[in-house]
Length: 299
Image (tube, rainbow, N blue to C red; front, side, top):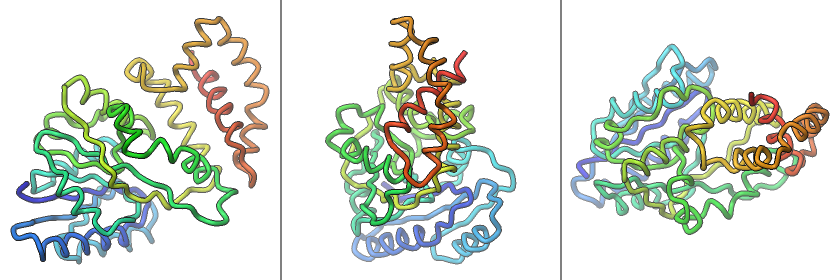
């Protein structure tokens, strides 16, 4: 490793604290590891929140840090491809801007795990927070916590890969960039994992999570979920075998129950949505809503 480029795409998220925490760890590592070089690049993908822009723009004043603002939003995949092109070093560490550093040795653990031919995925964790029972995103992510451990992820190394926290050799990423057809929310990382499987590139899973501590309101999360389901519907052939929800739909088709269940669930979608956007969201209702919404938009 000739150096580490930490790459953070952002859209309407303040990430000055995240950058500061990463910078502190990098400087501490540099003080004890002779020859360690690093940079942190934040690329704003056309944010519209002026207060966020004002805060994030100060990142460029920090040592070894750059803030790049793109006026026009180009999408989740293309902004990451752009960042890779801007990087100076041969090791890229991608981190989502709404994440939080939760381990003091986060950077050191990645440096220790570095492999010039492998992708390294550290995972994420959702720390327990009081008074969050009303928040659908928090409840959903906490319910999936056991599936995010490194041990569980290693059982399905390609399908349990996410772009929120991973290190990759720059040469591999430039040769295999993210699919820019994925402009909307959802599944670009799943397709990337499948692409790596086909190419025979190893994804190592380590226990080095980033913290998922910021949760949108219920209405925003339901809208984001609908956007993700639209992405799943559009790219369902590429995602075959990588979506549990699509597997349920395929079973319904084999059992000749798809049309019946679509009609049945359609009657309840509005009331389901009201529950999910209210103050007492139910996770069973959430699962039924996702299935019903996907059946509704599929042709």
